[in-house]
Length: 101
Length: 101
Image (cartoon, rainbow over the protein chains, first blue to last red):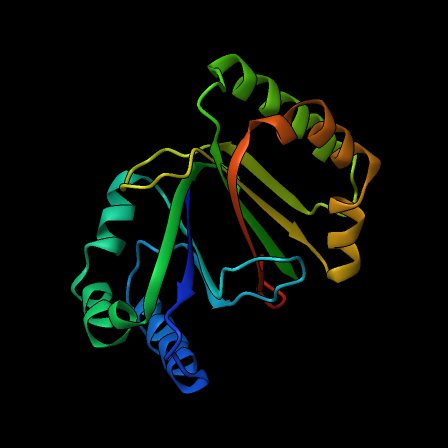
């Protein structure tokens, strides 16, 4: 399985309402994408110093599953409606996590 | 539960042998820290463009569990021996993932 991770730092004009709306839209999106075996998104709790404002952790079976998620119309729609204009910086990675969740 | 995520971009002089040794040391460390409910580390598969070279995803019960991991002597030892000199940039975040893994 593959764990896809993303961290975002928001632009200065992003509001708490934007972030709450983003979380609602991402959770709705995730519920409609069967390739997503697990999906977590939300504000960085900032338990350690960091300039990341938000993070996503998404578990998929394989590279095809990742594409089914990231290239989906639903994902693109969230990006176009909201996420795209919020991002100052973004960092992502994918980890091979074997057969374990 | 809390999912702690970290992504690293290595300095130019980091070798494949350094990375393999780091993974071995981190996995050994993780096996000895009961607070770590799940632990994954490894090279970024780079299935999408990214300048992150390596990532860690660590599941703990709560903030105390996170501290038991990040502030452990074993974690500090990996940092002092190897990780510290490898890092060009680091980004981290913690997600509240509720009761689900």
